[in-house]
Length: 118
Image 1 (cartoon, helix red, strand yellow):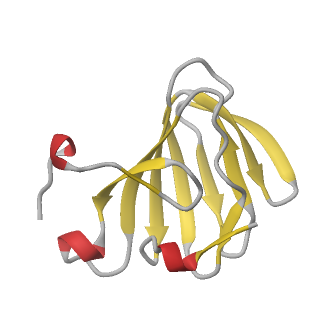
Image 2: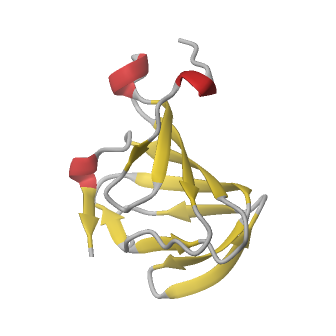
């Protein structure tokens, strides 16, 4: 299966970020994972949330921000990677001046039903 970025419509997730599902079982017939790009605008903070089943990996593709991961807070910037284990409360704030672009890999694939706002 092949997709082009320009053909993928953006949508808002429960946490308030704007995402494009680059690869998702509901669209691409893969089975075990999803890959999305999230964009967080300057000054925006995603809602604190957790996933009950899903493990996530964030790759900061562009920009900078402040990550909350459980009880820890730390700065992130382009090139950083973050592992978010199931059940871990998390959110991210864009504290920079340009859009924050994050590649989000989820296994199992992202689902609104697996997202609990805190």
